[in-house]
Length: 390
Ligand code: PMP
Image (cartoon, helix red, strand yellow):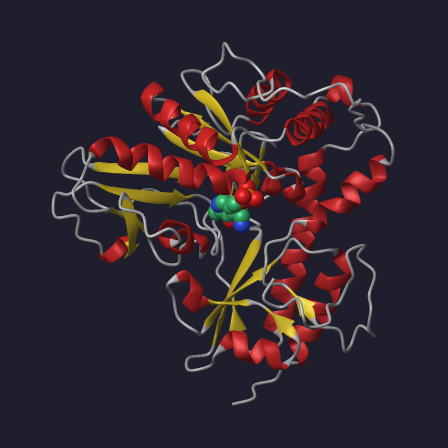
């Protein structure tokens, strides 16, 4: 982390180092430590032991297009999507990746490589867009693709391009559809649906797109396992994505896949009334936590006129059977005009990410809502004390 040299509010185990009133609160990353409390309650239940003789081979299932996908993980991914109803999996190949991050790169490769274009094709997304897209796209200065910037102002000139459709969006939590008017078949879409889970937003219908990305990082909070998956309709695109991962990392850690499968199984069971017994419904638990945090955030900023956050519409959620607003993983806060919001928060020992990083203005910041309770509490107490310094 860029901020690793500054003392942090909590150590890796989540305990406060300094007096809360002086602690530096790091809400820059979307580190999903909020979920620890759920998993701690389970204690030693649902642990996974992997004996020394298991998982030595590179291969998981040579009959599968994605030959390094563990069958147990495949089964649990299907089960969870069926229970939650957030994506259609039939007609799609499942590809596992080292986080959905690796799958974004794999998708860019798979879509652009077969086109044999003389120049790199543009990858675009409407501002504010996930700040890693430009970094990932341009890191290796590929001859296949390059970052093309804000999709709202992008002119495709009848050339092929890729639009990243992030829904709910990081940083602002908005439900999105593609924005570039294609007028032809040359636009290709990657749907980044890593936040399309019932704790964050209403599940209004099962998503059914050509390429959809998910990750345990934002679903269960196990970002450290580095397991993501792609649902890919076209076989040739799926094969190319597998090829990318083959050359990049020769597959994906089996231990991580087995642990992710175990975790997904646990949350699926937690959603089923007959099976769950004393297991609390994972999505209900995390939804309630986020509802509470967002309520407190709105109260905290109501008291001063410096910050504002957008309202989200009420929508019917097929999973919960109830109407709900969105409670995104990040708060996208706007300061008064002319105020550099990241700088202002930093003066009050709150680390956030500037709107500039998302192709937006310095009046905006993104603040993680997925940190541990202790950090969020200090943040929410400190926020109303930041008076208009202008
Ligand atoms: N897409 C989006 C929109 C994200 O916010 C993130 C994580 N911040 C990722 C992809 C990557 O997540 P991971 O590699 O942990 O699966």
